[in-house]
Length: 67
Image (cartoon, rainbow, N blue to C red):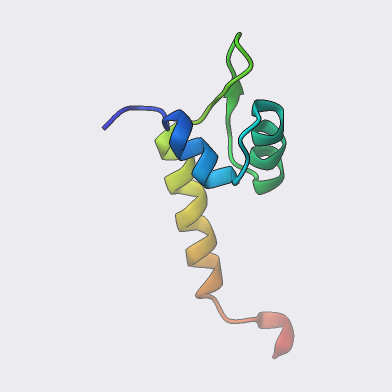
């Protein structure tokens, strides 16, 4: 498995095919990324795994404001 997501994985993650739209989507999702010189987004696998696990962990917490 590679260090970065493939171009296809970035398309699946963002739901976008154009590079600028992918970068905007990643920014809105709060996924850390860098833009390569050719304009394509570089996303480390660990950035996606960390973001996903953080969201899952917080979803399992009780809603303290409701109490």
